[in-house]
Image (tube, rainbow, N blue to C red):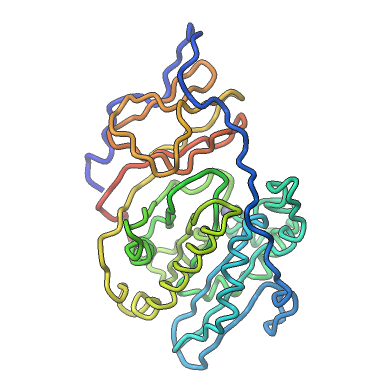
Length: 349
Ligand SMILES: [Zn+2]
């Protein structure tokens, strides 16, 4: 990373004790709970040949990379269920190696209720915060922790893993990678297939625990496993399924070359890379953005007010600041937005 990456021109949070006038802005918009996509029919995933619900294996019988595509780590993000069902029906046996399609939280999905679509994200705890050995190897039990242990063998053997997610609030597609060069190279190849190229983001981890892409298989220094997470679009929209299927097909097309040479078939354009510099948490229950920012919006100037949190103004700390998946209605203590800076330089490998 260049020394410029650390430069800041403006504090993020400014206390305004006498701030009384309203800022222009979007206030706290209602949750976008339009469900424009029916839940998928996942009958074929209940008792598959693998013996483990939600796990479908396509084995070439020839030596080669172990590819894994994961969907529905969050039970209500069932665009991933549609995408993996479409892939399953295409009988995607790779030329060499093995492909595993994995629907991670079927039990939470089964609780989906269109009248309360946010409630089936998980049953007892977030399945995407459990992937540190201190949790996986602990004596604790929860529905998600037990499920994580059940599907762990497929994660531990993955050479390339694509984890499909969707978002509640609007955002351009974004790939999120652990801070390892091998994974950012992998994501950049997939991102460069998009026009314009999708953003590839290295972030600060998640404060609530380790995500699937941060399992040691993908984090070990000198290891070989590569992983990326795709935020493909809004939760319950057909376009999100289309994006997931398209990226999965690129993944299957490019997998051999990524695995053996670290590059895809034709890298058409350089991907856009960024590093998260700050997680902005909502300290008050009255966090309001001044505009309904769409994720990946670039704010040109340092010091631009983007939100108000109680009596605090929230400002961009540097020029060309990217707003990553803004949560337009955060609760007190929740992550409101991540701030990121574009970079052309890889982190450590
Ligand atoms: Zn998710």
